[in-house]
Image 1 (cartoon, rainbow, N blue to C red):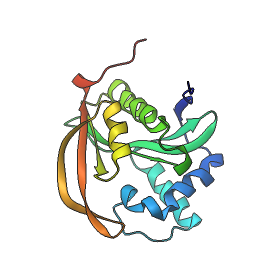
Image 2 (tube, rainbow, N blue to C red):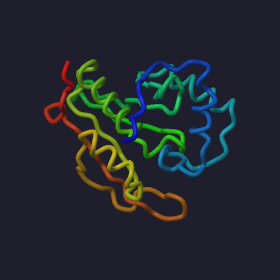
Image 3 (tube, one colour):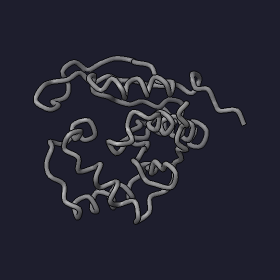
Image 4 (cartoon, one colour):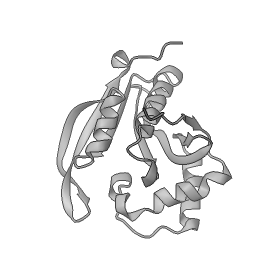
Length: 175
């Protein structure tokens, strides 16, 4: 039986830059991670993007596996009145499909509910990314709807699947 990697969330360090830049610059999955049109991303432009992320009210963690940065996960677009936020995750290609994303999503959901007092966490996924949708479902998310042909992804229109989890549906880990 294969052992599961130890996945944790932590603050970004300078040593994580190369791994995170590699994810951000990956044109193959650009449309799944960015609302803007795909374009080459320079290291300096990515450095500027990180500075903007650090300056706003988002919550962003590095996804760490055995001491190595393999991605990032965060909460953004907080609604302080309705107590909800959107979650996003991005992993290095070689770390996808190994349960790491499910573990990281579960941990950020716990952070949102237990530490930030959110009532709801939601996300968007392109409909063809079945592995991601399955990972989100394993973390407790349910499909709430879809925006038909809402995204232009790799040469064709794709539906956006809207998913969410309520604090009342969340199974808090046992202490």
